[in-house]
Length: 355
Image (cartoon, rainbow, N blue to C red; front, side, top):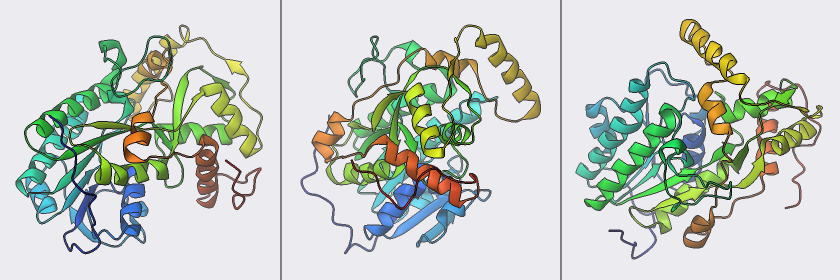
């Protein structure tokens, strides 16, 4: 059973903090910055080993803890008005899937149960389009597209799918929680970088002479952050909302990135089948070296499907309005350049292209 909020929350006069998990990461930092601009009093939960670069300049309270530490979750949620659970273990190669499940499923349940015990007014849970189904014909999927086992390739997709089911059950049992499903975010602040950010950076450096064709949905990370706040204000409890942007083929994305970076576009389209044994060798070496492989069999399997999504529900119900993918790529490249990851750009970052 879903319930609609009777009025939009007005956080400005309320002294209770808003907890954000994952604020040291890419999406979480963007969410925290957006909340701070809206006048929320921030409380940020992070691990003692976290890189805090994305928290620079952010006001608010810091709590050291971990999703696998229930006591720290109780401390973090105590007295909060809202909770944004953005933290997740996002890797496309995991030597130990059980470790990912402990964070993405068990940790999510532990945090949201702590929020419920602390009488938090509303929570927003960051799921992923990875938790959703895909269409057979490659047309954009939405929140109602049926899920099939072949849609959940790899530990990350499986963990996010199971976590979302568990969150829906909590909502059915009284927790006011809205689910958002970002697609592939691109933009400033991707310091790690994420797998998508690494693709953008590699192409901009001229390190992507070839590609495996697939379809992706690219969204500006700041639009994803804005979508989180819109979900808090207008979302229905127990409902999920895709926060996506523009559906593009990987060849189109590669041409866009290289044009903006002043590089030659990738021209060699690689077949998936012959790459499978090479990916298996890369995975084997990754287990020995402890370095993430450039390619995995799960990545190749996912590439066989067009990962296209529709944000129509979020646009209709939340007022979500994503900008073009090119602006996301421009902002990402400008940020990589500012941080010394790129030597130069073929465009002026100060000039915003017309929509």
